[in-house]
Length: 325
Length: 256
Image (cartoon, rainbow over all chains, first blue to last red):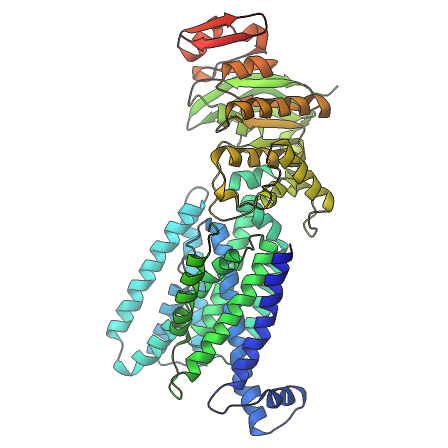
């Protein structure tokens, strides 16, 4: 019990520090005093403008995006009862990618790009769900296989589009595919979906603990398993779709963050869900801060930096830890 | 008194193969039933059907005289508990967390486990000889310890009817007897009933007062242990010669 509280308190502290650092660091470096003044008073100084219009929205966008992916990762892993599952395993990001790249080819921008990403992920979600249902009931294995095959199909479409796309489009397409937060325009959709999603997942958290022991066991303990699974699938898919819409397909957060929190000794979903949301959000804020400062003024795709931080961190903790995964 | 579990004209099948046809059973408080039969005859399928986890073809199952189909799922989870044969643990969880899962039907969806739930889970762990292992991860346990965690989870669930699928799997001889004695004493103290799938005829002789035998083509035979546990019936059931040895204290069956 104490251990869980310590971990959660540490993560609760990490989140504001990550966001504050992200707001202070950049081409114009600002002091924490500037930050607090611009947050409290409605100042119109250049530094306040940088904070209010550029850095804070981007940091909050990054946080909500990372939290959404981590939450979706936890849910997908329970749904499929597979530690290798991540938010993209069922092809949602693939559908979004194809739709967005086609929109880029068509030359649209702004809200049209965002809209097509969201439409693409919803389309993929319904295709996978409809096909997995087949003529009988759907099992986690059936859903996983359908999702992986659909994802492979989307992957082929992406390669096809990239191969034929004119050179002037390629750069922005590749950036989108690797995950890029510079598209963040408004933070509210991400924040709202994150809070609602976390709330709904928390309401089901004890049932998730039971479902982890298998659908038969959950059934025997009085849980309506098919209803719960449908709820998890829809919730995880919508959170993934929102994250992909905000920032393209940022890999890795959704896979490793749930495992990192489990490695710290939290296995109960009532703690695992908020813990993963906090860690996923903070990690993506940190990665994005690196992405825009390391080679400034050149911006790097945040997905790449995320993997560069995440891979060694995860391997180190896994190696050092003798906890069973 | 209302029987805890009653079955009338039950027919159930798996993959177009009939497991039982026109099965009638009345299981009272304090009774211990053993289900015997060869591999693949459908013992587990029947047990899952009794638990309400599978649909029936014909007939009716009632718990305390209420049709199973009319009982709400959470309420049913307080009436009957089932020990499954296979367990898989793809993710880590501690022993105590796992046993507390058994309290699920008693906790409202917005509530957390109470101190009493935790105390009950700890007591269940003591009863299966696992006190002190509360914080171990279940995927670091041996097969026998994992089996006893599952039994503790079932005890924490406090059902009236225990449906047990080979409860002595993976257990050493001492724990086989201890666990069977534990269920036996709970049956007497708490007025519950046991329905146990067993392969060990000597455990069945010792701990069951009623027997249900499953044969090919959905034929069944039920009765008291005294009537049914004879070499004639057992040889017909298993298709293998069986010897009966008697000494002053107990009867022992051995394969010839």
